Image 1 (cartoon, rainbow, N blue to C red):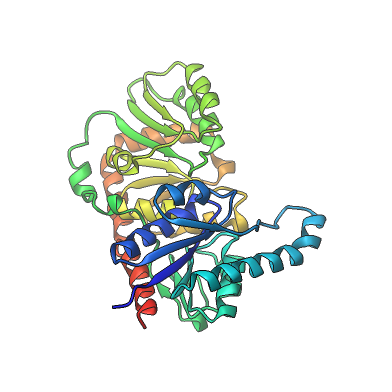
Image 2 (cartoon, rainbow, N blue to C red):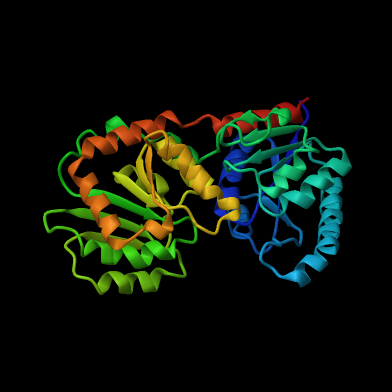
Length: 363
């Protein structure tokens, strides 16, 4: 059987890169060579080489909010990026090109189409991004993390969003939570790979509004840039809660296994992880996300009884304290929410996306 290769395009944020890494690992297990197209400034520049994949880069960045001068230069920047991506693709000769999102997928997808290489795209969010809206016209196959993201004429397959294998292997909610009716409530706080400043600033003060009988243990991922400020915020308040603060949590399987409930943003990767693990959540969408897609992501859970949705404008110290007090009293509600989240999971997402790429490569 001839050796096959897949070029993966993903960059910018963990929401694009981590699902793509899950697929890359699956393909590597099936003896497929994976090459990565990204940028020098995105999170992929650190994560991809560390995982043992060859990273090739092109110069491309977003245009929203960049001012008129960036928009005037955009056609030239995109043309150069397409040409560079085209030469990379012609040199690497992949059997399939998989676009998993980020600015790099646009020029890379156009280049794959020009080179006559099968182009597969995957949209993680519940609202279609501009890049994938364009690439859907060129792609040989489209996949989506949430049902109904693409228009029906695209004939997209709802695969779910790939997540890391160690989360899929965790015990189900009943096994994890059935013996936690007593003891402190375990609150995991995550704001994506960069943290969320609003959580870092608001949660410490919210703890001062809790009744002394409410016991909560907190594991808080602050993000590298906000770590020192968050430590100062917690040190400035008097609370009986036990708090662990980390700039970044490497072992998310351990964190989710420990937690009873998660306070977090509503990026597509976070939603997929919450569902895969099966855990209750308080979702506070990032208000400046493109097309407010995080609110739409969060509704997918909240409307099905799997999460509480709070707009950032509604997130007050007293509101958060009241929610935590309620969940501390009603542990059975946490279990019901966790079960509802688990029912929405698509643990086979990595395999499904990977198998589609394998099928294309060996066609």
